[in-house]
Length: 248
Image (tube, rainbow, N blue to C red; front, side):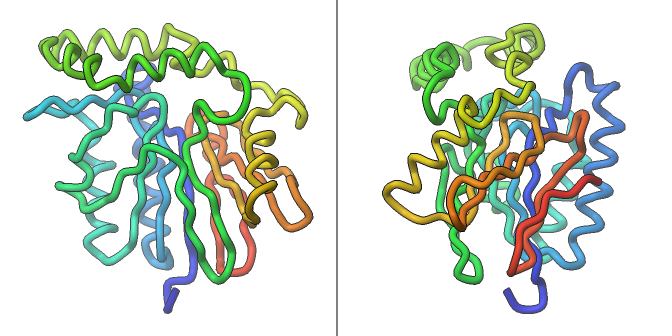
């Protein structure tokens, strides 16, 4: 990891919600955080729902978020690795980040190893038992035919419709999922424990639940939920030896 010894993790910013005007101070705060971590960051993981809605037409992307995108471009151009995992609000992410910002985009959890510590990283939506309503909806939304149909909507209509549903539909917004359910009922805890049956992971790092959590799931394994940048403003940092959840 050379001179840059820290790996940072953040999730669930939901920029644009509930309105661009109300979201703007949170965007400014996030950009300030990005500006601070660029001095010692080796890698930055963004674990989904950076935007409350994102859809890429062939030649159009949603307006706004210029400061966030510009700062990410600055970090990437400086040599900092950035990895983006799609969430349930930006699952229609295409190749814009990859082509414009040189940031790889992942649509399912992926394994990484740093200093002999094995990480399984993802957004977390649709994993583990339960959440059946969302899982059915996700299959429809990620179907290529559904995306093709949606693309025929004029962006002014498509984006406005999606923004409305993003806030009003609890399956999408996740409002029904913001209370701690207890270890035995936390789907991502159960998912992590099941994964440990076949392979060892030191850290399971996810977002989606909007609750900052660090839960031991094995003798040397922990499940971490990063919280959000709406009410908690929490992020994760790995210094090469240990993982910590911090508040900005």
